[in-house]
Length: 54
Image (cartoon, rainbow, N blue to C red):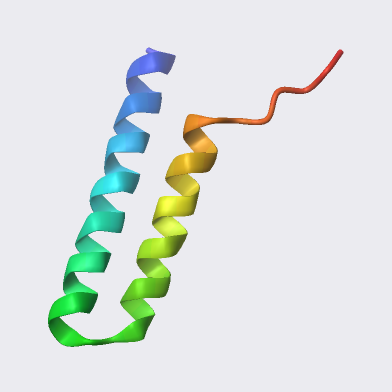
């Protein structure tokens, strides 16, 4: 279940990033570029999480 949840979150983040970038290119609003960047950063941070050393 944890794996399915992880993939659903990753999918939602990348879709939100693409949607924000697309909307910003059609309207020209810079806030959506920043929003897309935030979603994309969250996506990449979820894909490669920090591993703590024991």
